[in-house]
Image (cartoon, rainbow, N blue to C red; front, top):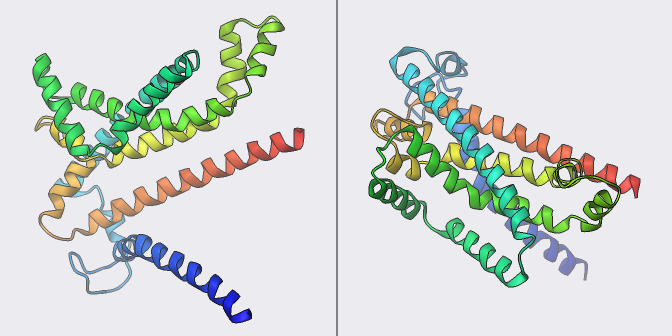
Length: 271
């Protein structure tokens, strides 16, 4: 009996360990070799911070920095705009009948499972049909549209969990619709809004295909620049930059989860 119990615990734990190793081993290798003193090689030559220090130096470093700033600017605009659109859309759908609400949510799921290649080409053809010249505007619009479905999926569950009696009670006590929205509904769904901003920001920073089809030759996002650099082999600056991005996203996720757990704990203690 003990051996059976041990086997039942060992098999799932081993499977999980192998999956986690498969997922995170490439990232660990990337982080380790970002400190390798031997450039453009998998031969370990010693520990160094030179690749981080010289990250934005030189002509390729300047181009990398410009691509990073462009990417962060577009991601910030796309995440905030898509989250705002998602909040308004989710609030609007709450007033629809269940069948129409379900239909609209199903339509929202479609872009999430659609290949990015299809999305990128679709927006490129749309802008060409409307006679809009490719540039930063088309890139931002494409990123906003690309991020909206993910924002809706982040905010909609929080809105479903919202106790509607809170809004009704606030209005019964004399609050206007705007005050109810600002002081009652928005604070209650704030965890969903924050997770939406974080998710859409990450999706926008990571995107390559939508950017590639909707930007002209004068604009280069970070994934486009990294892909162009990767054509010429392993670049230590690439390793250093992606390591920094990974650490920043990891820290943001930890902060988001910790703040969410604290809010949940406070609600439970109040109850």
